[in-house]
Length: 232
Image (cartoon, rainbow, N blue to C red; front, side, top):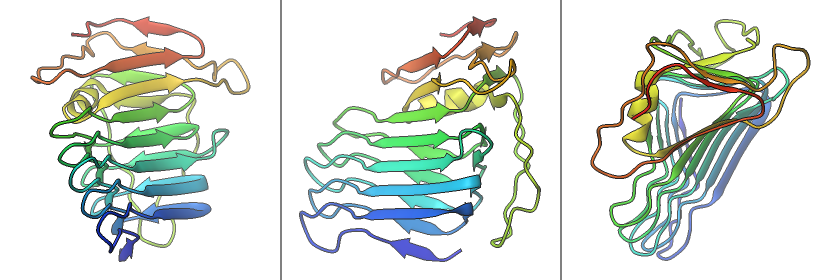
């Protein structure tokens, strides 16, 4: 809980930079690096060796404000060999563009990720929508998702054992497309045959975008992409 604010206090100045590093990094409060009056949002980095958790009550923003102002850069990262990056239901990440700017960038990366029904907003009223990047080793898009991780402000309340495959529900992908272009990538491979960098869309896990604004869903795998349901 609590607040960390590196938003600009001067008109025309971009938001600042916030970097939080540790063995475990968690947030359930407010972190902001917004621009001020016609300036871009700043940069926010949360990075851990084991677990980076953004949980219910979190509000992380790097918004552009005013004219010619772009959304900033938010990265939720953990170790690519053994770490977990998680954004749970009830959390909100925002890197919106200003009146005449483009949306920013949000990344959730680690050996595994967990994505609950959080709000991720990279829209821009008169500019290009920003990009939301998911980057673990393996990804399976399923019909159902789970959201059971919690954080007590001191240490994770459940010890994470790295899974060989991260999962995300098809409905969560659809929800993310409502306010961002989505990139799911496995650009690196780990050790052993279980960490080849595959992306799989399970049977029955169709992805249907019904919004009126154009969106882009990109799947980029280091190994195989297996599509067993429709994308439309």
